[in-house]
Length: 173
Length: 307
Image (cartoon, rainbow over all chains, first blue to last red; front, top):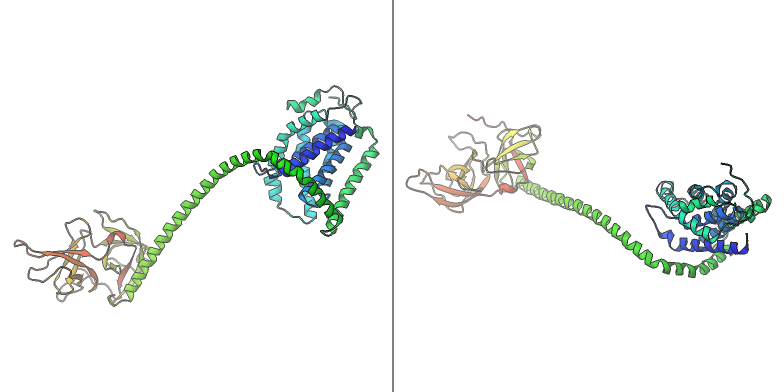
């Protein structure tokens, strides 16, 4: 990981966060909203590993919490975990699998939504489970999967893979 | 998918600093970040609105504001275009919804108007019942007209009351305006009323001014015009005279109708040398095409037996 890599990743996440907060959060398609920031974070984490993913997630969460003026640290915690786990998945087996981006986006969208719902419930910010899980989550997940290919392509171009080293886990099949 | 799949084609797996560091370092950083997040949540939740984290958040929000404005400006044309099409689809849906609502309200307005008319009719009937012209030896059953389509062939209407309500065959039917007809068929909860304008109807009637008696029946002319038949030439009947039911006359058969129910106004009187009786036309007070509610007069005692 170089400083330049960190800068580019930070820039990607920052732009995604600003676009998400300013534009995409108002976009409702079929009852769901695409989460560009989450998908960008997963792409960065998948390509640069768990440590990078966790740091980028923390940074992205701070931006979101600050922009929405919501409980500081809430989104940071969730995105930190999301970035870390996706990074670990990429470091171990996921990075060289074709379905890894779509799978990670779908799974993390579900986990992120459920965790967010649970955490907000603990903090006393109750919302309708039916609206969140039945009406909003399926279209949001679909939208995230749809934008994943474009976002991963952009991130791959911005963060090209480093040519040296050996994989942590070697794929046999 | 081709783009996504391209990662599988890379021959040399990458090496990453997060992976090259020890697992301990990775976990340590992760733990620190999670701890920081939890600490921020706790402090933010417990401190007042003027606490340090809130102030920091305000500063951060102010710093982010220019970027948000810039992003909004860049996205504004696209948002406008999206909003245009969204509104277009929304307008179609709203149009359909408003049309449905309009249909529903129109139906409701019709029902209200109908109910108001029925209420007005029933009020008039009640006024008639409490008035001096209501026959004292009769009681009444108020009923809504549920079938109002008198044709040239069948001058009949159906009413929403029947034998269960005490209605009997041949009971006279009236409105506040005057005589309507008589009950000619009775079911348990409905009844059929043959109107005065039916060719088979005939009512013993008299001129209220001169007491010239005759028989009210439907005339040969089209419409609701009635004729007062069987009036001798020497009887005096004039235009504008009021014709009422004659009731049971001394020395004659008992009438089905009580005396004094108004029928109509004399509109023309004539006679020829060859006719035995005067030719008298009567315009009925009742508008038979718009009868909404009626009173069925039920005799308190047993009805007269017809021969």
